[in-house]
Every structure is written in C-alpha cells, then in structure tokens.
Image (tube, rainbow, N blue to C red; front, side):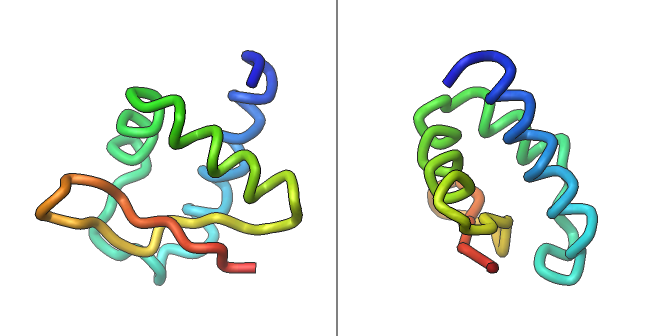
Length: 74
C-alpha cells in the first residue's frame, strides 16, 4: 500500500469511527490509529476489506491481547 492509499484508508476508517460512536463507546480514535500504524500488516487486511466493498469498523478492544477488534459493518 502506498502513502496515498494509507492516508485514504485511515481517513475512511476515522470517518466511519466518528459516524458510528455507538459501536465503540469509550474508545479513542488516536489510540486505534497509533496501533494500526505500528502494525502495517493490519492495515493491509483492513484495506482489502475496504477495497472489496466492506466497511471495517472498530467494535471493541481485547484486554488480553491489547488489540482492537474490527468487523465488517456494511
């Protein structure tokens, strides 16, 4: 994924996050974004979801693994 695609994906995920706050009460976008940027392979998976018509969004946080949980919410 190039830099432009990276920014477009983060922008789409952020917009969806802000639009659907009921899915992830108590979570902050800045923390989600920081985790995603630290693990580019996760962004690749979310990009594939987005590219094929899915609408990935954060639906929770796993305290045991320290990872955010994404589902296709289309």
